[in-house]
Image (cartoon, rainbow, N blue to C red; front, top):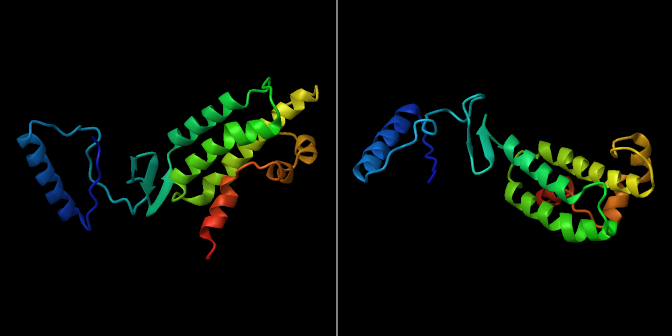
Length: 171
């Protein structure tokens, strides 16, 4: 399995790596050479990816691969030819998935949440456009004006940006 060892300085990290190598070899295991490295995750370009996160420059980011996977799941659940009420799609199909994903990644840098929320709303607008026999992908200003963000909030769409703000407010 994968694991990460964090140390205060390079010499401590080298010593830890030496101990881990000895232990793994003594137990008939080997370290994967592509996954084993030393770096300073407080510096840019020296971070590492682990469990869907990217740790770099002293911050936690959501891995590009994790965001791409979420977008694919949203695409599958929001095909433009999708039937069912918008409330059903949101409450039964999207919200639990979005909430679960957010709960896992809520400790990441906040910059990604608005983009994901916007992507989900554009997908929902595309369904609404199709139902109204109009062309489009839900990205036009006209579609946004017809179904603004407040419309989706009223019918209960979970938004990561709002959840992040709520989680950060003092109680």
